[in-house]
Length: 150
Image 1 (cartoon, rainbow, N blue to C red):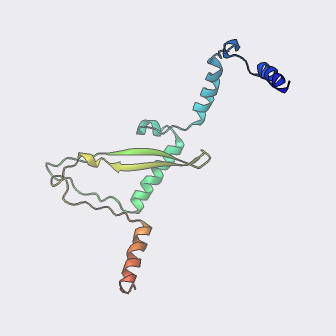
Image 2: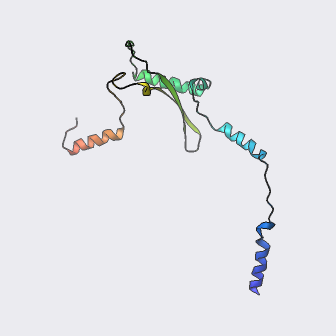
Image 3: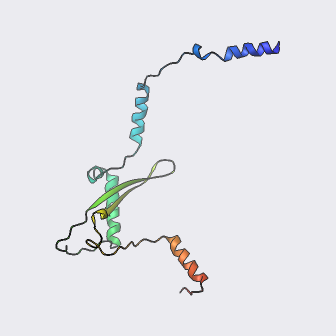
């Protein structure tokens, strides 16, 4: 008798998949949502013309230029004869916080080094970048070897 009751309950709640009716939703209901989301998402500009229209990107470019000038990254020299010029370009990145909001607009000015040829346009490479952890590791090795750091 209990088995018959369970079977009746199952038939009430579990239907044959052929008996179910599927409803198709109109995709228009999602257009408003997608339009709203596309307005909320910040887009990184791909060139200078796009970036120069937005004040936040102009401020980021001024900050990058000020940093370059403050650190004396450039040295103006006369152009050697029969040598090509290395071009440059701006790169734009949006730094986000964990919740997705914009933390910082970052503009990076860089040379197009791929156009250079070794021993024609340059003889040596120099990258004045060192990580703090690398410096600490070198100092700890020096101390372990008995060198005195002053």
